[in-house]
Length: 188
Image (cartoon, rainbow, N blue to C red):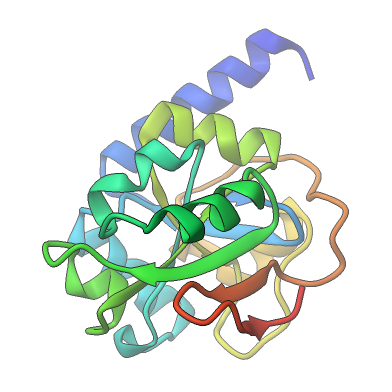
């Protein structure tokens, strides 16, 4: 894909996200479905499209850790080293949320699941838009999409834009770790 076409698609995705729309894009293992995490209407539309209850909480992705700082409580130095050593990369951490983090992201918990993605397109999208909600592009409980076509077919008109691109090399969704205990909550 030429850089001009890529830039046009990225600009279109940014316009969609800032307008409160849903965008599907490739991530490390599957196609993600994302939106502006601070736009409650967009988040609830995403949850409805997936048929996912709000109490489950959501994952946010970012291009760098600084994008996530306003949403998290400060990390102690040891935890910060462990988390940052895994980023950018396919490790999602469940960390203490800042008290002002919207409840629709945390599912009402005091924690938030976050990742600094190493997928080039997903990272570019975060650089253009800021952190994004990132959940698998599928109906909850069904097989995640691994291609742009599968994302479109799985979600139909609920998704406003599908960015074409290859998913990363992972066979399974990213590993998820608990920041307070280091325990693996979901193997990668």
